[in-house]
Image (cartoon, rainbow, N blue to C red; front, top):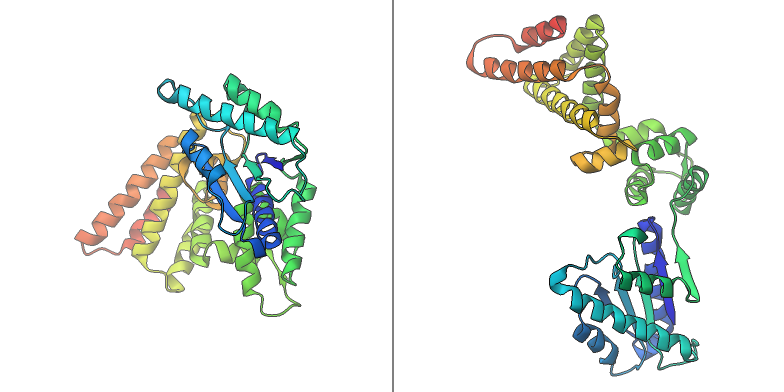
Length: 339
């Protein structure tokens, strides 16, 4: 049996791969089915043949999973070796197609080829030949990104599995923050569900915000928004509220400096690159998607010169408060008034 799983939705394709692996192991439990997982980057002729020939003591049937063989970049130094491996795999597939490859065939190895997004234009001729052969096999499944409606339904089903409920606005915010990154969405859902103490509570937008970032960080964003919108009265009031609620001045200065530096990085990147989504920017700059989303909104309130100026003013305030007997809150108030 030949199974081909591929497509950009790595989360669902990985879940399918895991389910197939568990199914095969369960079916062959008494015969102790052996499983080999091979990365295409590390695959050699000897390694491939060893996987085919090394049978279990209790079973002649093996599950062989080959990952990312089409993603392997074939350079000149290892071209002959890589092409030889792919040719060997092509011959194996052709032989499997010709034989009566039914589940009842106890001596028949099972091959699963797993690939993430395939860029056909970047494939070599031998890789294209393998790809064309794989997509014509009987068991092929492509995992395309879910549509917005499909993604919403997927989130609702994941929450329902844990006997919980979630607001539509919370679903929309999850999608807005993480786009189609199902790994990240599932991670946040697991944390949110774990916090629900009874089956009657509903996951809200605020629950989501609280689980991602604490209240102080959210207030820092509000303060940066107010400064950027030139609402000095609100900015001074927000700063005062933070201090009254017990926030440490050194922490506030550090958080503000960090946020302005992040906005500066985002604006610098956006100036020189065309962007598809905030998730793309987050990935390039190694930022949390929610931080990046907020930063993209805030950078519109500033030019690069203003961002650089405020960032250096914050560093200067931090230095002054450590070296001179002066109230740093006054310095922050002055920063707000002057900007």
